[in-house]
Image (cartoon, rainbow, N blue to C red; front, side):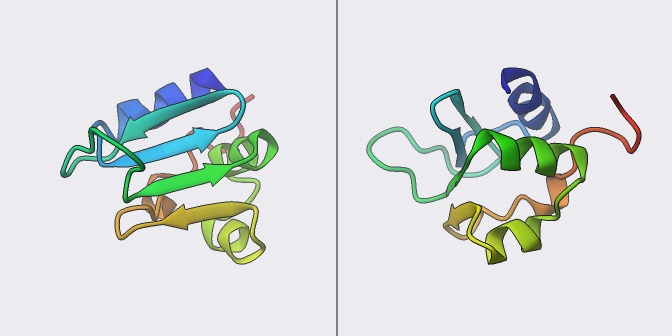
Length: 91
């Protein structure tokens, strides 16, 4: 999980969106206004299985948001342009 989140932060460095995969990890990414205290205005939260499926391209962003397996709040919380993180056919 931390490896995939590391790929996300490499692809979209910054601190304007917090991506949470409880209980494994949380990272901040995407350029923009940095959030420093309290609940961030731009949050993406999902379970580990869904995040792996998004990162590998097995599930699309819109599908995961529509079925409720991804909760995304805030104007910058759309990660569809950053996914998948791994090239097709990657192990």
